[in-house]
Image 1: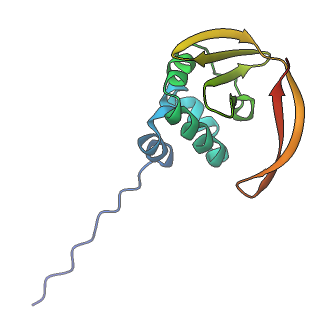
Image 2: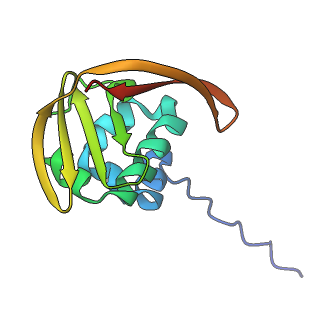
Image 3: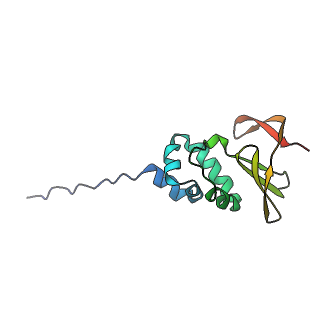
Length: 129
């Protein structure tokens, strides 16, 4: 007589936990924040990519309350030559780093132009002055 086939145990993992394993930079925002905004997954990944490029941003986010922060409020501005980068969580306040030194700054922007980025049209803004 044949043995019945073993049933494979299917364990479904949490998609939020999978996202956090792939992009640990997002843990700076907190698991509940990521879970709340998981439907904007592509935006969260875009944020994580930038935070991976500029690790100091992870520390800035960890030190600030972000419970009500919408993912589209998170903005990053990088100088063309990469010498300076700014992270804005609550406009007009930003945190900027240049040559390893981070400072808090008031960020005033002006519209520059439209450009195509990853197949989408986006407005390009530059700091005033």
